[in-house]
Structures are given as C-alpha cells and as structure tokens.
Image 1 (cartoon, helix red, strand yellow):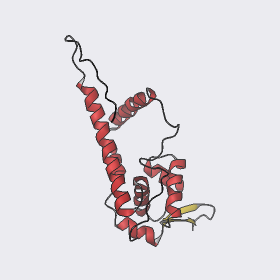
Image 2 (image 1 turned 45 degrees about the vertical axis):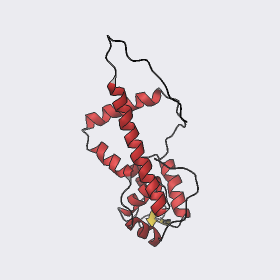
Image 3 (image 1 turned 60 degrees about the vertical axis):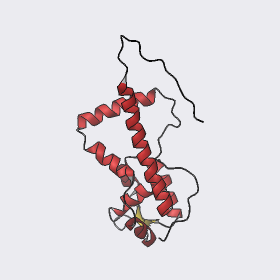
Image 4 (image 1 turned 135 degrees about the vertical axis):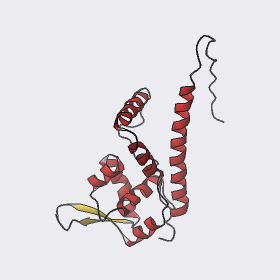
Length: 177
C-alpha cells in the first residue's frame, strides 16, 4: 500500500489552495500520458518511449548528427547518445560518415528502422513539445522559471535529466520489423 499524507484543512479564514491540486493533477496527466505512450511502444514495438521518440525524429529527415538530434528532441547530447546507442544495438539505426564531410558521423535509419518507424502512431513527447511550442514565448519563459523553482525545492536524482522513460531495462525483441 502507498503512504497517505493527511493534512488538516485550511483554517476558516484562509481559502484552501485548489491551485496546488490543479498543478499536481496536470503534472500527473502529463506523466501518465508519457508513461502510457511508452508502455504502448514497448508492447507494440519492443522499444522504449524514448527510443520511439528518437526513431520518429530520425524518420522525419534524411540524416542527422547527434547534436542535431539532441536539439530536435530538446535533450542533452549525452542523453540522446544513450538512446541512439540502444537503437544502433538493435539494428534500427546506423552511424555513417557524412557524404559532405567525412569527419562527421550521421545517424540514419536502417531498412528495419524505417519499417518500424512506419508502424508508429506518434510518441507523446512530440505532442508535449508541440503543446509547449504553441504557447506564447513569454508564457514558456514563465513556465520554465516556475518549473525550475519546483525542481529546486526537490532533491534531484541526477544532475542531467534523461529523456522521458529512458531506462536501462532490457527490451523485448522488436516485433515484425
């Protein structure tokens, strides 16, 4: 059983703070949507939600550098690199020398990766990004500041955040790719 925190109701002369519940409910809905999207990707495709998101980003263009992919996913390069390494391991992505600059490596979907990407229905991370980007820049800046305040009041688990639902668990084999 989970723990239950009981709080005394607000004193009669102070209004109760329904906004705290609304904020937490919104965060819960975001996490729940991301978790369900990741669970569906694992069940249907055998890859994590983070891997699905990266696979879809790679499918959206001819080839990408790791830095380009990090920018497109709004994630630190080291986090996206971990996800890409798993996709390479599974034979869904290959690293190839750039035809325009042999010093650069590009990430390209393999035939198997293209087949799998064609079966996807969309990662929730993409919907989250589109929703945030539709906000006016001043609202995004305010949201970033407010979320940073919340995070600073918590004990961070790690210094650099990983991609949503990227973990080190073994994945089931990819289905019919």
